[in-house]
Length: 248
Image 1 (cartoon, rainbow, N blue to C red):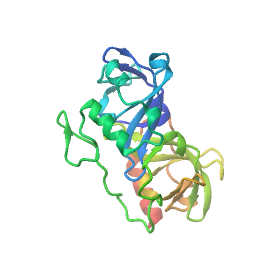
Image 2: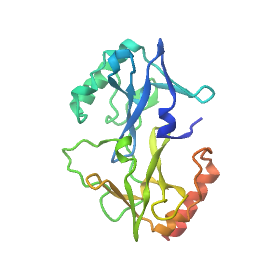
Image 3: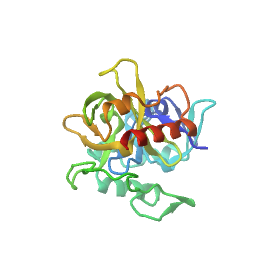
Image 4: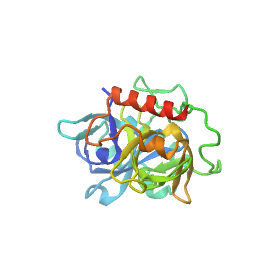
């Protein structure tokens, strides 16, 4: 059963390969056009001499909330022999091709391919029409962005600044970034709210800011978000009704 998880909660999970524990998650890389998580960045600790390695969500066998663990359907040797991330800064398509070839997985950019009978996550169109392009980076630049990079970005509503991005909320079934957690304490104290990623009009990577197609009042008056509580279908309905009414 799917669950929504904040990046910081995912990073707190214990990781286990088929043949033993294998470090911790330090961050996620997501596609800045489709908001799909492409890789988990694993800090291997004492194993592999402290180097970071990438894991595609395809390798995740499951998450057990009872003991706060994530099972990886790979052996340590398979991970150890993967192309090292240090050789790809930023991560290039050439690196990704070598990575998927190593694990004998069909790459995510090939539409319609499957892995063990499971459809591979593939970019979907944004669910709403926006007045301007979502991202203005040149086609030559990588579309992979770090969860650490965007955390703390300032929020620009239609009528001014309001808070910053506190975290990203991931759907652990299809590994989509569904919401950004907004902390409005820059404007009014004590309020946290979720905003759908479809409400993001533009991200300026140089000024570390996000522009949304909402007013400050729409965000501030959204149903309150408590990170310690599960995001239920009823809560999501409240969010969609609220933002739909405020945008009308």
